[in-house]
Image (cartoon, rainbow, N blue to C red; front, side, top):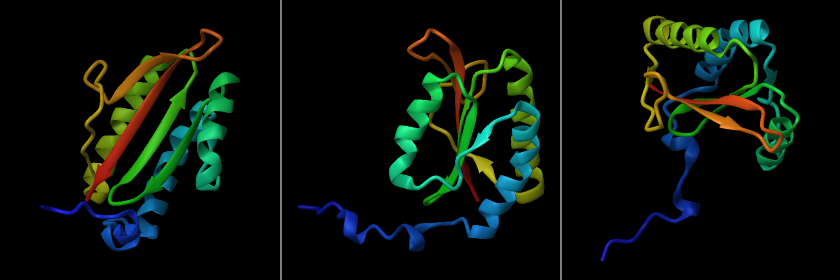
Amino acid sequence: MKHLMTFEKFNVGELSNFSNEDLKDIHQEFEVISDVYKLEDLANTKRTETAHKFEDLINQNKSFYYVNSARNAYIDIFYFGIDKEEFIDDMKSFIQKMNNSYGFKIINSWSYTKGFPCDMKENENGESYLEISLVFHK
């Protein structure tokens, strides 16, 4: 019988392909989009507070993003703006740049809308937003 790896044996640091420098590069490149679309950066939020913070911001119709890494680097984005098509186009350009400049490829297994790893959702007030989850691999 095979034994599943226990949480204690799962050392995220050793499995990680992304260094702090890689995450810094992703974060720095993404700041351009973040500034244009006024996304709140939750990168310094403690991991235990993140889920509650996400929910609070979604219910307040606030756009935000979160960059993190385990085995792969990822960006979770929640965008409430009206120019969603333009936002998706800019995100596609961002992904292309990350691939061309750094060799980071998208490996999402996510629901795709319009050929892009995103999902259209609504908060409890009926406001629609894009949830985008980009998982990078190098």
